[in-house]
Length: 247
Image: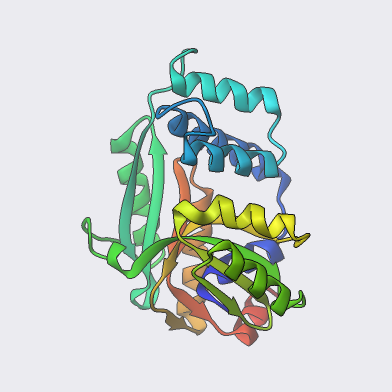
């Protein structure tokens, strides 16, 4: 399974947890608010359009999204969020990027450092692992979809690559081409599972046994933390080991 799909697949198996729904909404709306600082028109603000699309895909109410846009644009009073990225290492030397948005950086740094250390990881300095990732658009289809149809449509739309394994077909794009490629695929009647701009690892670190379990717990704790928006890591866990750990 590709590195990008691994954690998404694990989260899907865990199932949607209603208790986390509110947190999901909050994180999506934070992204909308921050993105709207660069302009409230999604047609000319790529980041805002992506943030709105993601919020809509998670069924965030339209009026709630509109309020978040107005807060970011300064039309309504809102929280003073700061954004940034932590870089660190997990079990087995796995590279981890953590994107955050916070109204209290000191608190967030202390909490994230504690989460890393508690799960056999540690924070690194800026630039320590970011060079191991590339920002790309990824449009993922179930592995049983028509690969030839996806490949042909993706090639026509200007995608960079199409990757195929038994679990998924992934169309890879440059970030600026993501929306155009996604809309071209939709126009061909192709239905994806996920579509997002993300950070793809260039190399993978294979984990097993205790390190694999620690890595999954670390990812879970980081993603569950309120100030964390996204977590990216370059770990790989064998399918049979995953089956065992997921019970």
